[in-house]
Amino acid sequence: MKFFKYWLPVLIWCTLIFFLSGTPNLSTGLGAWDAILRKAAHIIEYLILTFLFYRAFKGSFSLVPFYSLIWPFIFSLLYACSDEIHQRFVPTRNGNIMDIFIDLLGIISFFILLKYKKSLSDMASEKH
Image (cartoon, rainbow, N blue to C red; front, top):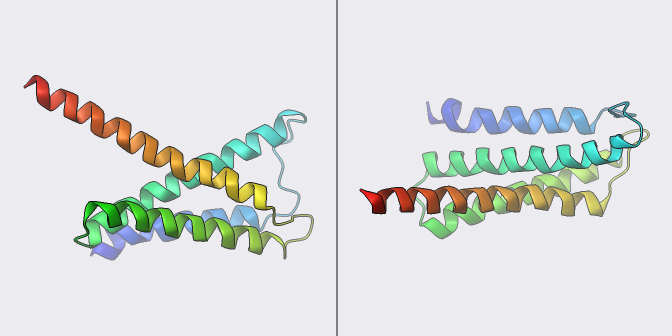
């Protein structure tokens, strides 16, 4: 049951990223905005992937807080690297190390949002 609740969303999201990465000539069709929107998509894709890994690890294993943060980070970063390797085999696409750094922005963004959410929770509990 944990697989369907926690890990199936991770697999579905990874499949979506793989599908998009395997699409030749992927473009928004918005000219000058295309590059910006595609890079923003990288950030959002990996923010969501990191959230899904975080949720899956927390829901499936009893981990100390450090490992509940480090494993989603590692798995998301490894998937980002594998995604760029995959793109090297797709016509009109190329693997780009800069995209890994952009994906890393999404991964780190998740942890910033998590920290922000925790600080809001802490502030709310102090008021009660």
